[in-house]
Image 1 (spheres, rainbow, N blue to C red):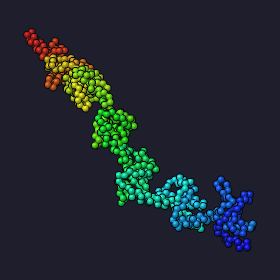
Image 2 (image 1 turned 180 degrees about the vertical axis):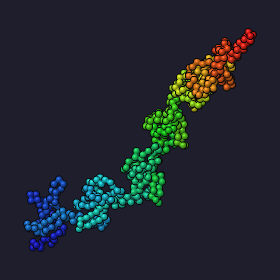
Image 3 (image 1 turned 135 degrees about the horizontal axis):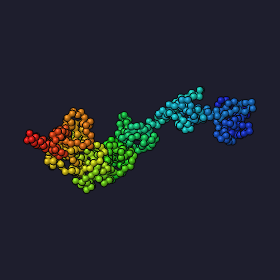
Length: 557
């Protein structure tokens, strides 16, 4: 009767049982499976992570029959094997139905990741199946739980290969279809920054990637997209262009806000003082960011009233915060002209009061050009002495014949023109004295013998100062009876010499002098014992005295 009341059970099958006793000392859990003998399972199969026994009397569980009767007349059972076999059945069912299975990544292994799926079964996730794109660092996935698709299964060998990529591709395709159906040009949509490059960023709109070009990121200056965006940033973008056939999407970020140049004319009227940041330095000036999308240019000519600025870096540095004055605005061509010198009083406005025409001023030779000499009359303010205003009497071929850079000179203010963009100051040196040509022809007539001082010695001769402001040229051929190769070998600056006036040209304002003619007359007069020669005597006086001496001699004879 007992045997007839028991179930017909077989080894290596799964049956249901009930926990009837827990024997901790023996390390066993006793299970009633409706057989003539009770079954036993090692208590170790019921420990959790904290080593607590999870089984309780009365629990109904599925167990695997390993042996129907052991040496203790007990049925040997296993809960783990029942769980594992049930998992394999679930796995087989998941493959047949192409359904998903959940698992937790346990560790990184060669070629991929080890994953524990339902029932603690180990599976392999190849590196190529981890994500939609190749992953360099697999460690970031360890400990995370995902859904997978089983792509290979071998129960006998206990081999299971998973794919997370297949799940992601399915999700992406579903999102893509939905996104493509609702995309419209001009709409603002949300997207996730997927990748940032030098020329822009790719934005995931939901299965569809759109390109946000660097020129469409901001109304302002963007040198590197990474300054504005980071991978995984969630942003709003505007669909600028959509090509459904090729699934290409062009996006804009700056287009979400209005172009600041639309109202710039109202905010940046000429004369307005503005404040901004130096964002770029060029050879011709500095660009100042006044607000996002609005930049103005300070040309080098607008940086200083008096200093000659060769490069803006002499005045400004990148990232400087500066104030400037709006000089002009052209909103159509997005240009604003700025100036910083206008923040200070224009020193040229008071020049006419400070330096009236006719005023004598001390200055320093700052530069020498072919056409004249630039004199600095105060720091940053130069005036020009034209070559024609250097001397009343001397025909100057180049100003360097008379002046050197750094020479201290006195000048006369001739004119100040402040109407031009850069005021011009005209100066004169010869005007320091009256025009000597009003008296030169009568005082220094041809034939006069005059004492003078060597003013300057040049290759072709020497300039001799007869008196202040009056000088003449002794040509190299008139220096000596002997052949002179280099005037500097015969004459030195400052030498006192006697010269004869051998030529006058009032139109050209030239006085031609001769040292050898003066010496010839002196020698002749000395030889004849004449007294007509003197510092201011003329050749006529000498010849007259010589003639009178000859007549006297004839009378005596």
